Length: 455
Image 1: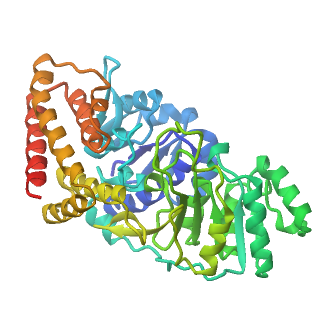
Image 2: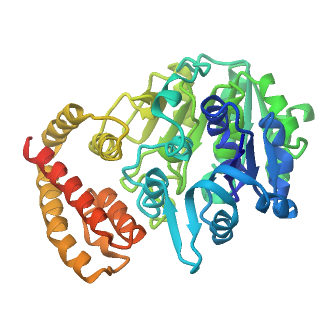
Image 3: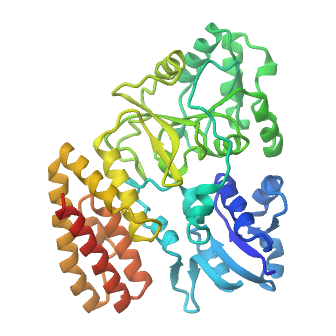
């Protein structure tokens, strides 16, 4: 049988995040070998996590171009990945692909949806692990996959792995945070072990010296990826701001507490499996694609709240911090919190809307329920969405008549409507303003307006 090709030219964490897709492909296409194309240094490190998979890189490009694939799925946004997706021989192609004229297109409605999240992920609730798969894997396959479910509990584990850093300074706590957390654990007779790469070594040395810890508790800079994965089983709980190590720990079945800060969204890339948790300092601008407020979510991020979580076994929350529990909704990843706020309900609304509009499910009854809840919080949001949808419906006819559009058109709309306006502009361009695309957009908007009017 023809093999399947997954193109992933992004970072290490992005490659690791394809692990659920790999498992689902094995189940859905059991007779098709699964191949990955990635950067060579990443492929060498991750290949042991994907038993039976075939890995290609630029050094073996010729072999890829002479192979007939069942389908190719490009999960990268880099131009060379789109070019490669054009060049490979595949019966079906998904993701970014270049055409013979050098123009970029996106194949697959869920890959198109993910592209619409660029600078626009405030109300996204679809995890990237699910978005990786939804164009080629059925919802039933995802829903029925048997994972090891953990319990949402923080009942004082004995051995804790603390991963000190992340890819960017804005995405991990300062030294004061780690000092407060280590002090707390030591006072409770727990053992905090320090992990990280070479760039975390200096911080680890200072912490070891400050607390008089044995050097054997400092694992920074000592492990390659495979060794790190093997070491995970030693810990009872893994605490990390870095999503790469977090994904490894998650898929190894280890419970994770993700310290989330900076311009990352746990809805997009949080720990995938139920039973894991995310803690975030709440700000009005969360979540964001890029920071415009001097990383307010990182500033003054205190370990005291994390300590209170352990003292209350995860049953504590206040207005300044938000604790999310990884769960499932309609078979897909979903973050739940003990306290629901206005934007959480709006996010759930868009989750149900896009799942319905893109054919995953038919949840009109649930959509109507969510809209009624939104109207209780703020009826103006309903009126705003209705006005924006009607305005968009009027604009469509002019846009399709001229067959051109300003790429910032979607930003003309209020943030509450931008999930749909951002998706629309990409779909229109992607389909060259075809008549079938026009009819589909009008149908979407008419359904959308009908839901709003029913409240």
